[in-house]
Amino acid sequence: MENVLDFIKTRRSVRRYKKDPVPEELINQVIEAGLYAATGHNRQTPIIVAVTNPDVHARLAKVNAKYLGKEGIDPFYGAPVILIVLNKTEMNNCREDGSLVLGNMMLMAHGLGLGSCWINRAKETFAEPEWQQFLRENGIPDGYEGIGHLILGYPDGPESGLLPRKPGRVYWVR
Image 1: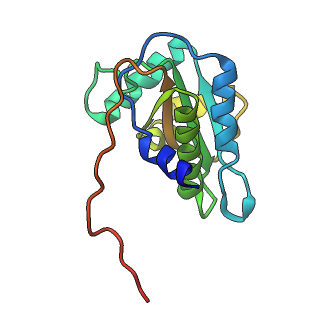
Image 2 (image 1 turned 90 degrees about the vertical axis):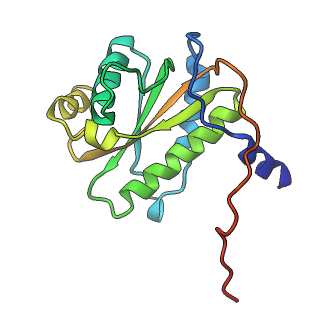
């Protein structure tokens, strides 16, 4: 199991991407990893919306930048793929289960040689009437909230090295 820990240690958030498209086969493998994330009582309620359409990407970037307070920038760093994780608002573990989906997908992306980065502000975006309508138009019923965006693509530049962990973050009760 030591190789799993090494793999986890070497995953990094990527904030610079090549324009190269990501093959759908690789995107599907990342999505599959997300679908196998643990969920409370194995309810499997988080859903994933895969966005490769440049127009939708631009609209998402615009609204995300607005909530970031930096209008006019691309908060998705030029990544060609956005995987949006949503979950049923009514679920007790809504945010937690969706977070596990995002974590699984980040690790799978790393394993496939792709870069990824979790981008926030999905909750605010998908609370807007325009984006609720977008979900309905794409077959997603009401009652879902945004958990996070996972951007994917081929990294443009070297990966950062292993960063030391801050001490004093583990407490034992024996």
